Length: 304
Image 1 (cartoon, rainbow, N blue to C red):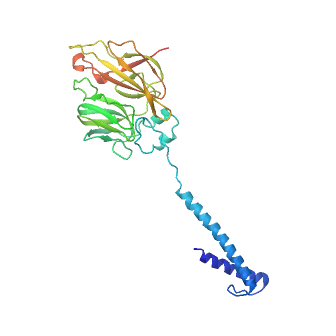
Image 2: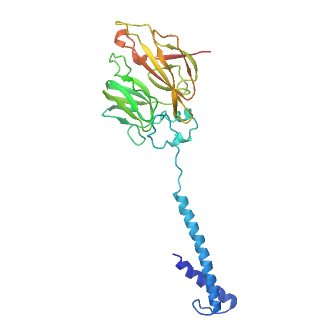
Image 3: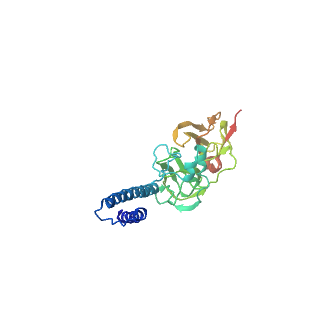
């Protein structure tokens, strides 16, 4: 390995000694002087070889080192089946910053056929993001599994105009590694949702981020419809809600307040804080009371 540099070094020393002491030296001779300088040449060559070898080793070692990403675990609670987070998520410093990276990042997917479980993956057809899920054909249960503690396992969706009690549009947060099931639904759309410029005070069906979609605070609940508008059969419109809590890294740390707002429960207040998501699920039985469930909104009137 070091043979060529060694011979070159010995020849150099032979020439050097010849100049200094004025004697012709044969490296392979038996003269004592030759042996001394020959030994010195070997020693110096070995030192140079070691220095060069260490430099090469350090250079190769530096090339193989890489930084392992640390997942920020956005809304991953129950089971973290995801791969590493995106660069934007890794740079985020708190839950609000993490969730903001999910708005407007992916294009809409219009009127796709539902042929089985939908896998959410950055390398797949449906990528992580915040969408409006629209039911276009068929109807049935909407559920998710793995990764998220924002569980919409009791959601039921039908196309608009079907005179069913369930919405046709839901705000959804789809995370890396999540599996979305649309049972009984044959065609649907995922509409891209951009980051809102200002928070709102009225929320419809779906999951909404406190600090982004709606401001933190204590609110008295009301509605944008007549909660006493019962039709034939005394079917009343109603709203259910559920709050989910997260830490600054986006990990679920438990469920918060939940309840209903309807004709029997009208005096309701909720407290919304940073690092929370609120889920809203309306039901109207529209063919009885004439209220379009997709237009139903839960209103949040701030209390002093």
